[in-house]
Image 1 (cartoon, rainbow, N blue to C red):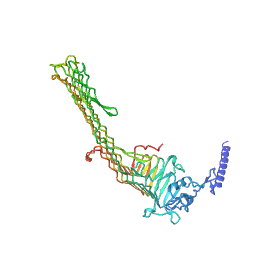
Image 2 (cartoon, one colour):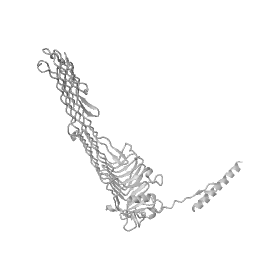
Image 3 (cartoon, helix red, strand yellow):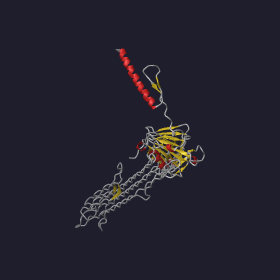
Image 4 (tube, rainbow, N blue to C red):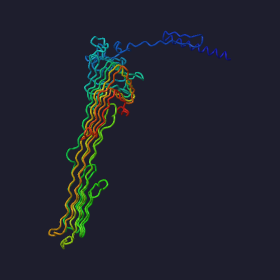
Length: 549
């Protein structure tokens, strides 16, 4: 049984091998052979024929079937062939990504003449730019490493980020690992050309984009200095209100003390003078304390005065406590964030508002019957009422934090992108200095308390009621902190894969200094913003915000 079974298995294998041999022979001229008369066969599969579009960008022949052609002298109504190139890079990129209008397949390559293109371009992943072409002779060959800048294709828009390599759903991906090659190109970012109007960034790789920069120059411009923080108003904050005077004696049996006055400072913050004490028959009432009470409610600050008695005169209200001045705010701290629009730095902290002044205490009330005299018979017998305290001044507003200086970053590589730099120069320039913080506002002045009521005319030995205390001054608003200095980086990345080959030169320029705190000498470093970073490649820890929704 075993011999019969083995024989059947060999017959089946020989049949399958014959089928495989026939299929292989039909597809190619490859021969199949066995190493013995066993049951297994091996077929030689030749390497695929090279495409005429493959090869080194320096030496490969430029063909119409391989790409779209663009020249400064072209016309965007042309088909983008060698003999009829288009005029703008972005139009050429669109044709290369999606195919020419007459139904050709997408070539996924742009051949660009050496010259200057003042436009910002968006490059779908998987589309190449081969620049530096010599177009005058018509062969569109690579010009070689000439000294003149015109040997390269210059992409230098007056505003905006010159090159953005698209990723994710915006990419054109031939295979899962499709990679764009940027060759023979000089990318020049203008100063402060990013969308924030501060940073200068030459190239951004969006999420998932894959790029090889080869034989090219990627140059950032200078970042802009940060604007100083807005100063709070230079005039004093809102002042307190004068206290009300108390009523005179012998007008009522119980003369109500002067009503309190209020300074409204906004955001629900108020300063209130204490109410004056009532004028009574034998004794006067005490005044109330001014508000808000200071921390710890210290002795003899803003307290109401006590009323008069048959043996003792009344007491005036105490002066309210001054509002606390705000401390200087801190300078900017942090590396900032990389994102879809480039880099966002850190502003200095805003100054806090000064404390409101406490209202003065209300003055004590008088008595209608003194040791030697009293209100005349037939008239009301109440003594004079105390004056209310003056309200305190409002605290000054704080200054605004200094703005961050713009960064200078040649290439920004975002989450999931892959960047390779080969035989190229990548340079950051100068980062902007952080802006100085804004100054705080002086606090408002406290106002005097009202006068106590007077005795009835002719009653010279009857004492008047007491006046209210003066409200405290508002505290000065806080000075603001300085903004962060802008970075200078060859490459800034977050969650990206970056390969810098030995043939590449990647260098930073000069980082910006942090902005000064308002009214702070440099040597004190109070409120000083953090300086920028100068490195050839810096990896940001914080995740980027992701593509806009």
